[in-house]
Image (cartoon, rainbow, N blue to C red; front, side, top):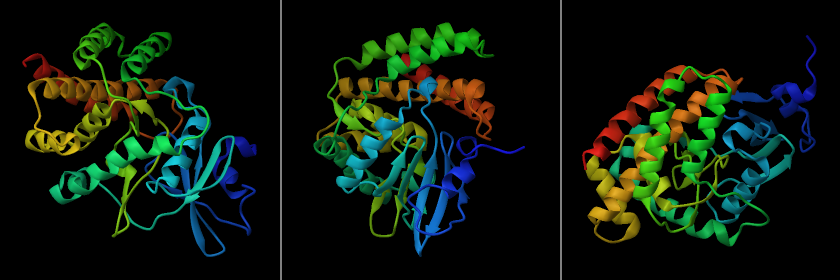
Length: 296
């Protein structure tokens, strides 16, 4: 079968007009929204991210581009080298991709918090043009409609998910608005030995800082003591019962969104990834966190 360029990510990455020589893209493992490649061109390395808009996940590439450029200007993320519809090329960073165990290390957490605060407060100073907001409760409700339309195997749980989202949204209450990354998986942090970098801005947008804090904790399984430290270090004040409850609600919402993201991906993604196992893992973690929230 002969593939057209737009349907063949490898060929697409190899034939981008920014290259100054013939290149041989090497697949970069780990992407579950894009197909990524490392490309060496005249002795310099880049990452080519190949992926179109994903309306089912509210991923719009104009927004990713605006966030990636602003994050680079803020000194948080690699420079954007080239972009065109369906493709983004950024500088390659030689460094270690973090694991959840790395993130849980107290010394690493102490480096991550200032990076998050810089993301939240400095990126808006560099943003240009239209960008999105990321309100997790809207995302969850939209996922509910998508799961219904696709006759997902998880439909029996949907009423419970939507009821939980309503309860959690009320518990979060009024929020401060910052510019969030909104996808703080460990693999989105890179350590080059001197500094940390934050990458992959697919879900970036204005949001409450509680979402990134809750996502950081849930995606990396921080201990309760570490969560208290995280809140008090970020907000530079002792954690009140009210703050703890609003944070716990947003942490549950982060887990619910990740669970439903995977359920929708089971229906729509063409990327080779075990979404069913990812759904089961996150659903178990959401159920545990939501049960704990309801006991408070």
